Structure formats: structure tokens, C-alpha cells
Length: 403
Ligand SMILES: [Zn+2]
Image 1 (cartoon, protein in one colour):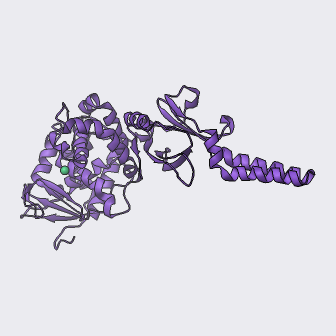
Image 2 (spheres, rainbow, N blue to C red; image 1 turned 60 degrees about the horizontal axis):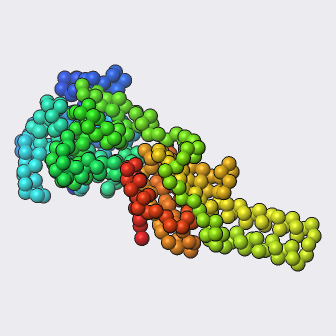
Image 3 (cartoon, rainbow, N blue to C red; image 1 turned 30 degrees about the horizontal axis):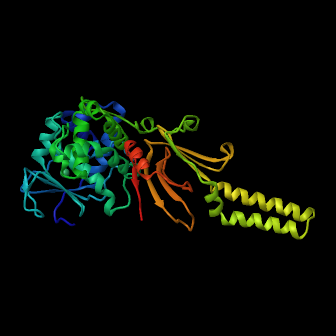
């Protein structure tokens, strides 16, 4: 998308500071260090964006600062904040007829790489800081969500965690859709993207009410945006790791809610190669029993047992953690314990997978620094799929059964 005329010029950081101090509540209540960070980010954002004025709007520095500040507020806890996919910011004086839908709009985020906003409604959004309407936050949240669609580089954590947020938001979202009591405004029921934007407006404008009425979703918002806003404006930044329980607790010392134990027989059948090693060892001993063949047989059997051991998985569902163990003997086994707050998704591939009898569980989780994948194979018979699905849904984990 190209626009023939636009403004792209830096603004002095002192001017940015003065404007925000005067009119931007979130900024006013930040501490000195965060103010510096906010100004630096706003300044970089303004330098990169191409602002287009429509319908004779006088595109002042103040407009460019406030519009950019809304984006910086949403992304303030994130590592990446440029929203590179959105090159143009089109500003109208008031509501406008969209060239796409021919309906009157206050704002829209276009996947072709531009965002349109009514300046009058941006102002209304910041002048009423507790009414849960904030056009700037709303549209920039869409932009953040869609930034990765055409462009690879966006915030690593946000993109990885958004699936977890969707799983966690389902309860509140369906309440709203089904007309049940909800603190969120009706428009959020349009689709899950609108729900995210509506939640974000509520999150920044009425954090106390949000936390009181939907504490779990509130916590997920804090993790997603890596900040805890306060109703006086301002926010606590860098809260993610404290909220995500990535530390490995000794979950396996407790009693699991339920467990999938590998079937030894199936493991043996599946481990055709392991048995083959064993057969070779017997054969070696049978043809000639001496010190060399005995040693070789021991090595071969040991190797077979090791391969077999690594294929033997136990999966236990604890109250707070999922525990995966590969190996018979716990003390020597490869163990992984994932807190459900960091477990994003479980994909279950049933049947003959890799020509083995059993089920493959693919786990996506956040390990404290990165989103990781772990494949756990389980040869348990009669896996309680429905039970797993219901249990994990309660834990806000997405469960998929790909064909
Ligand atoms: Zn929207």
C-alpha cells in the first residue's frame, strides 16, 4: 500500500516528553526511568511511521505523539514494539467512510499494512481514562496481533503466548457471546480478535474491576503484555517471569490426578530393534561361548536396554504440573515437569505413529526463555482422551487431535 503524501519526520524528545506530561495519563505516573524508555520508544516509533492526514486535518506533532503513544503503551512490556508491518498511519478528523466497507468507521487496522484512526475518537479515548473505550489502544492491539501475518519479525513472546491467551479467554468470551453477565462490552463478542482488543481497553482503563471479575484472564493479560497496569495510569513492567511458574517443582512426589503408564508389552513390541539386539547377543553366545563373545553380548544387551529404556514413557497429570518421564527407573530417567501456566498446547496423534502401537503427545511450552517442543511417546492402552481434554481445558491448555 502506498500513499502519495505523508509526514515522516522526527520530533524532539523534549517536545514528546512535554506533550505526554501534559495529556497522557499512563505516562504521567510512570517513574523517571520508565518515562525515559517511553519517550525513546515513542521517538523511534514516530521516526519510522508515515503519517497521512485526511479531510484537511492539520497533522500536528501533538497528534503524531499521542497516536504513537497509544502503540507504545500497548507494547511497553514487550521487547519488540515497532509493528513494522504497519508502515502508514492514516488520521481523519472524525468518523469517516471506509473505502473498503463503505460504512462509517472510527478506526480500522488493515492487513495491507496501514491503520486508520479518527482523531476525535482518539482524544475521547484518552480524555475518559476509565470508561473502557480507547480507540488508540483498541486499534494498535489489532495491529500487534496481525503484525506477524505478513512480516516475520514481531514480538517473540507475544506470538508464542497468544495461543495460550486464546485458550484462557474462551470462558469469558463464550459468556459474552451467550449474553451471560460480563464486564466486557458486547462488541467483544464479534470475534476473538475484537475480544482481545476490548479486553486490552478494559485492562488498561479498569484494571481493578478486571482483576476482581476475571482474575485468571487478568493474569494472562499481564503475562501476555508483560505489565500490570494501575488505574491511576502507569504500570509495572517486566512482570512475566514472576507470574509464569516455570520453576520445576518436585511434582512427582505428589499423587497425580491421573497417569498414563506405558505398557511393557507394547513397548517391547514397538522396540523391535531393542529385541533384535537381544537376539544377536543370544546368537553370539550360542555359537561360541568365550570371553570375547560374552563381552560383546553384554555390550549389545546393554545398548538394547538403553534404547528400550528411552522409548518407555510415563505421563502424569498432577494438579499444577504435567510430568513426562522417559525411562523405567525414575532416578535415571529423563524427566520434565511443566507448570500448566507455561504449557501452551498438547497435540495428540493416535494410532500407528512411526509404525508403532501407541500415542504420541507433542507438547508446546515456555521454558522461561524460549517456546520449546517436546515429543512424548506413550504405549499405554486405553488412553482416556476425553478425560485429558476436559482436564487440560480447565488448565487453559489447548488440546488438538490432528489427523
Ligand atoms: Zn476492532
